[in-house]
Amino acid sequence: MIERDETELPERILDEGADAPEREFEAGLRPQSLGDFVGQRALKDNLNVVIEAAKKREEPLEHVLLYGNPGLGKTTLANIIANELGAQIRVTSGPALERVGDLAAILSNLGKGDVLFIDEIHRMNRTIEEILYPAMEDYALDIIVGKGPTARTLRLNLERFTIIGATTRLSLLSSPLRDRFGMTYHLNFYEHEDVGKIIERSAKILGIDAEPGAVRLLSERSRRTPRIANRLLKRVRDFAQVRADGQITRPVAEDALAMLNVDAHGLDDVDRRLLLTIIEKFQGGPVGLSTLAASTQEEIDTIEDVYEPFLLQLGFLTRTPRGRVATDLAYRHLGFDAPNRESL
Image (cartoon, rainbow, N blue to C red; front, side, top):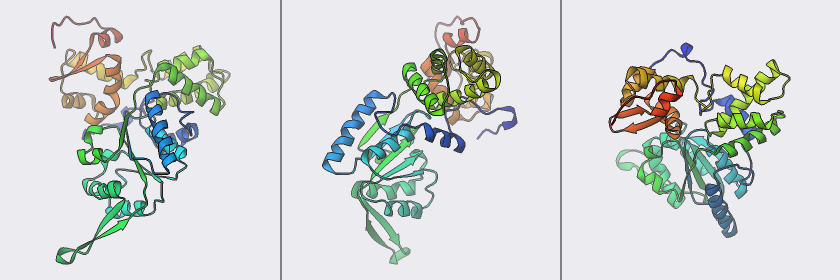
């Protein structure tokens, strides 16, 4: 793991992750039904059908796996599914399930039709995962009592429940675990129009006066991610209250985003530093991921999970067998002349 001096790197306004205060803020803005959930139309249509079918059969919903980049609404959808089913939801995460007893206590307290949401399910250890297999398939918990020759297995029957798993790294889930989910859905980046609707809804809930032009500007710079859109809305609201009359106009939003160093494509200092490193230190690439991580003082997982997906979406970065390459679009965006290169 690469160590870095946190005093030199300010909190990233465009970070897709969320700390505890951020999660509390998000909770107040989350829609409570599929009808209020903006975007992800194909996913919503599928969920509407399977939820309605499960309710008509009076059966628990099949286990659901949601995957996609941070901030796209996996936790929100898990809560919506539980609400639509009229079920109680228990929330935990893969890293929090450290002992078999932790999982056994949660599963044994679930009622019929309840939902267990496991965030970051890819970080669950293998021992816990193997205990989960019979629970997901047979609604039973196998507990080993004793040690050595006298050890025996007790089977504890469970109520029929639904597990909703969320992950940003689908490839890190083992095949046996993935196969036990009846439904797997991918959350895509949002269209600017949908992000604008999310900002309008959040502004209304927060009592913020935001002009349509400002909403459009924020949606264009939110990296097509609702969590970032809401975070930018908060920061621009602060700017408007201190530097303006509280109303968020387009000029006010432009000034606030300039102060936050968020450019027209939604890139911030960290994104630009990553691209500049590839261009200036490695002649545009290709450069290996571990070398890039060492050069930028970022962790490999952070580059892969947080920075790369959006840069790939914009066409500023490409992956090749030999490493990462900055594209001509990235050169022009950062004010460089595109290089003459016939091949990577």
